[in-house]
View 1 (tube, one colour):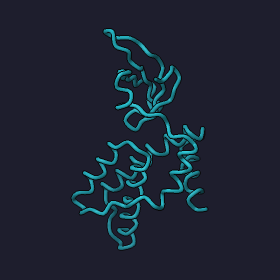
View 2 (cartoon, rainbow, N blue to C red; view 1 turned 180 degrees about the horizontal axis):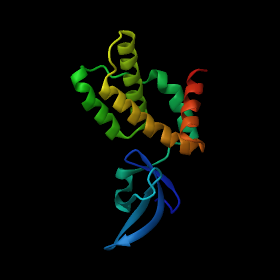
View 3 (cartoon, rainbow, N blue to C red; view 1 turned 180 degrees about the vertical axis):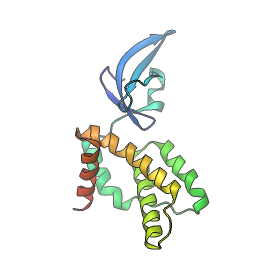
Length: 158
């Protein structure tokens, strides 16, 4: 069970538990999105394992960074990519976000090298996965978004 003030991930967004209240004899977490303070979300405590997860720890983050080069790149037909991206986003794991970022980055890099237009879908999912990944990392490291991104880049370049 989470306490008031805890940071959790709900549908890939970092949220703060601002209250725990009872509605119709059922306990609910009241969450505030860290991106949009006006957004309040009620999540049944009984469904916390399905809908919420704790933020990644610093140790888990460092382990993830070491595993990035071993995480696969999607190898499916172009027409199937969007479905795969959606499945990975729904999965909600940090590894899935990295797979999206790696796949979309490499696909667009190849397109650029071949002097082709960048794929809009790839760019959309790249930006989305980056936003989710670095937003959570920024809270874990207690830094801003750009510093979180630079932290990962620096670790990967070592």
